[in-house]
Amino acid sequence: MTDPKPRQSAVLRDRSVLALLSARSFSLIGNAMAPVALAFAVLRMPGGSATALGLVLTARMAAQVLFVLFGGVLADRLPRNKVMLSADIAAGVTQTAVGVLVITHAANVGILALLAVANGAAAALFEPASRSLMPKLVTGDALQSANALLQLSIRGGTILGAALAGVLVALVGPGPTIVADAGTFFVSATLLAGIRAVRANTETGGGPRLVAQLHAGWREFTARRWVLAMVAQLAFVNVCLAGSFYVLGPTVANAHLGGAPAWAAILTVQAIGFVAGSTVAIKLRPGRPVLVAALMMSGFALPLFFLASYGPLAAIIGAAFAAAICIDIYEVLFDTTLQRHVPEEALSRVVSYESMASFAFVPFGLAIAGPISAAIGVRQTLLGAAVLIVLAGPVILMVPSVRAIRAVPDGPERPEPGLPSAEPPTALEAIATSTAGPDSRHTRDVEEPR
Image (cartoon, rainbow, N blue to C red; front, side, top):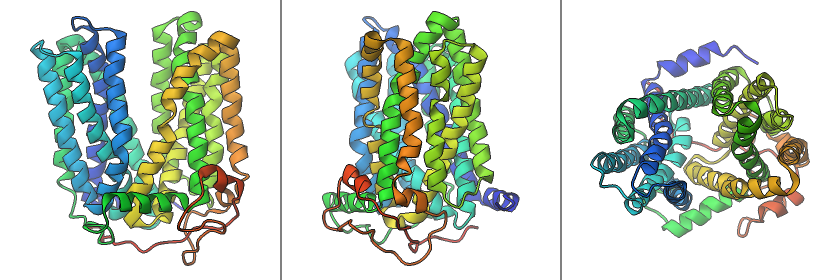
């Protein structure tokens, strides 16, 4: 490991990087405010119910999943900061409309669901660009520090947004809170406008059609076994974790730990753990980052073991804190490795496929947690999910390229054996037939920092 201070200092002196970090903070403040304010807005409407709220939230999630691949294509064709800026403006407009409708008592479930679709589409366009812009601004060993600082700004915005939403809903009501949420997107857009000019990718801009670019992105996504293996691991863990922690966790807190205050304490300390994890990731420089990230995922299960024992609360809080550190280290290491090993002109599309595949089955995990716990018991379900998550780390190390991939690519690009370029294998086939072979560095059209 080397001293991270020079890296951090150089990164933070770049005005474009500071603008990106600030923009992400404000955008995430809005994202954290929205669910709290929207929930109370829907539940307080005439005929409002949990079913109505579920419909609105499902509409947004569906739009986000459907449009994320299109967002990846746009971000690889156009300047990524401009894509993010446009998405922020669209999100601000839709949230302003929701706020005005709620304030004027003109909102109904159908209108809110339609606006949720528009808002989810905006989020889908924003996400791939936001995760692939940093390599345009920062190069070399400073990239991981920049990604860790970006993750830190995201976590800080999320914590502040959730706290602000609770206060504002109590003081002024959900409608004005949603309008304030809209304002954060406009602030983010203004900050993004201050990022120095980022050129579009000449390899894709104005070139092949949408379907062809999606197919090319899919080939890049499936061309690396370590990417397929890590995404398969994350998708599996997300299914286990979503239902066990976010469905059964509140159930345990309500029945055995003292109710909502206990669950709020767990989530608050978890959020602090995310910040701590991003801070650790600034200094962490493993030679084989994917191997470390894969092992970090086993730590995601820590709070499930203590929830299964129904306490003590302090132990659950400590476990949630430790798990959050593992989660943020994983995210920083994996994102940085993707940025270094995937061709810059295809990075946004690869990120969009990774995002869709990793989280597409989360609703399934949320849906099955209740029925499984009813059939075999809450404690048994939590323990089973925890064991599966712990095993996911060592199992994924059976893929040689997960063990072999290095932080800095070396040598020319070589296709991995057994992966024909025309018709790449499925994730399961890739994992089953994987062989070692590090990916290579690709030249990037990056402007020098100011």
